[in-house]
Length: 591
Image (cartoon, rainbow, N blue to C red; front, side, top):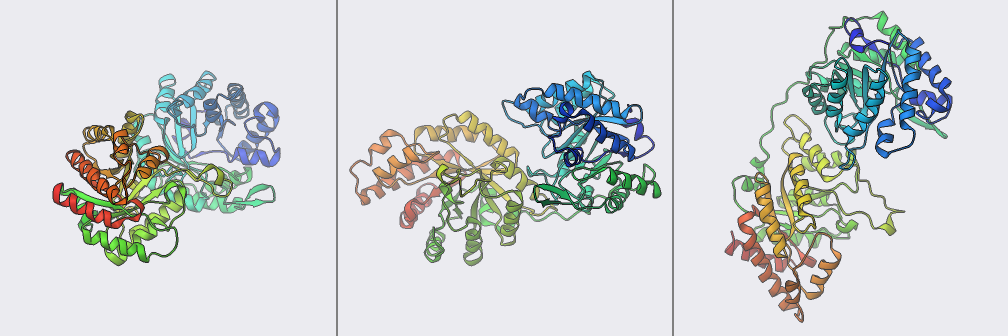
C-alpha cells in the first residue's frame, strides 16, 4: 500500500468511484454488511476500480461512525473486514483510505468520539490514509484528525464536504468557512468536495476553496439521480464526466474521483482523458472570487437598528397576522401602532403551529405600504435550507433587514399524518447560516438576526448556554419571553451580565383576565406567572382586567429597564387600544 502524500509529490491522485451505488446495482445488499456477507463481491468492486486506473480506493466502511455512535453490534468486525478487503485488493500498487462518513454530534455522544473509535480500528491495522467524506459540518473533525496524527504522525488526512450548488452544506455552513477551519486546525492535509453535485455544478463551487492553502479534491456524482421504478440511476455518461473532470483539474484540483453513480467506466474515461491532456502538479489553481465591495451598514436605512446601535431604548410590538386572507383590519391596527410611536412590529410565524397569513409576506407589506420596520419570526419547522434562503432573499429584496430566528412549535401529534415537521436545522444553525449570508459580498449583506430567550426556562443555565451559542452563531440580540414573575426578572438581570454584547428586548405581555392568566400558566410553553399575580385577577371584569394589565405591565417594564435595550410588547387578543395605552405609559414613565 502507498501513502497518498508520496503519490501527490509528482502526479494527480486518482480515486475510485461510488462504491455504495455501484455495489448495490450489482448485488443489492447493504454495502457495509457485504464486508461479511459477500466479501468476494466487495473485493471484485475494488479490483474493477483499480483496473480502471484508480490509485486510491476507499474501504467499504462509510456508515461506521454512525453505527459506532448508535452502539450497533458488529461494527468493529465490519471495519476490520473492510480494511482487509481493500488492502488485499490494493497490494503495493495503490493507496487505501480508511473511509469515515458523517458521525452524529450530540452532547451525549460527540462526533469526535465516534470518529476516534472507528479510526482506532484502522490505526491498529496500519492505516496511513484517512478520508472523512460527505460531511455537512466539521463537528469533531479537527479533534479526530489531531488524534490520528498523534498516533500516526505520517498519516494523510483528507476531509471532503457535501455542499449544495450555492456553496453551503445542508447544515447551512459555508464551504469557504469550513475549508478555512480545516486549514487552520493543523491536522488536515487536503480538503475537498464530494456527493450532492454533478461535475459542472461542483466546478462552480470549487473556487470557494481557493486560498485555503491545502490541496483540493473533487469527487462529484455521476450526474443527477433519476428514480426508475424501484431504484435510482445516474444519467451522466462516462465521457461527459471525464471531460468535466479535466476542467476541474484545470481549476487546480489535484485529487480526483467520483461519488454516487460513478462506475469503473467513469474512472477509466477520466484516467484516459487526463493522460491525453496532462497538467503539471503545480498547474493553474482555482482563482478566488472577485472581491465585492462591502455593503453599507444596515442601520443606515433602518431606524430600528440605528436606534439600537445608538444605545436608545426601542419598543417592538408583536401583532400576529390573521387566520384569514383579509389584511384590512390588520393594516389598520399596524397604522395605529405606528402612530403610537412603535419602532418595529414583529409577526409570529404560525404560532402554536397553526396556519396564519405568512409572517414574511406580511412583513413585506408593512415595509412597502407603511414604511414600518417589520421583524418577521422565521421558524425551522416549516422549511428546509433552500426554502429558507429563498425566503430570506425575498425579504431582503423588499427592504426587510431583520428576522427573528426560532426553532418553532412542533405540529400537534394528531395532525402529523397530514402536516409534517421539517426541522432540518435549529435556530442556532439557522442564525449561523443567515450570518454567513450576511457577510460583505454574500447574498444578504447586512441582514440582522435576533433570537428568542426564555426567561422562564426551568433550567436557565442551559438556556443561557444556548443563548451564548446563538450569539456566537451571529445573533445580534434576543427578544425574551414575558416577565410575569420575580424569577423571570432575575433571569433577565443574569442574562444582561452573561450577554454583554447582545441587545435584549424585555418581553411584556399584558394579562387581561383571570382565565387568561390560568391559560398562560397551564397551557402556553415558556410562560410562567407568579401565583400572587394570578390571584389579583380573581373577580375582575373586563375593565378592571385591562387596568391591572396596564399596571402590571408598566411595573414590569420599569423593573426590566436597567437590564434591557428595549421592550418587546405582545398584543393580547388583538387589543390594539390597550397597547396604545401601554406604549404611551412606557414612553412617558420609562423611556
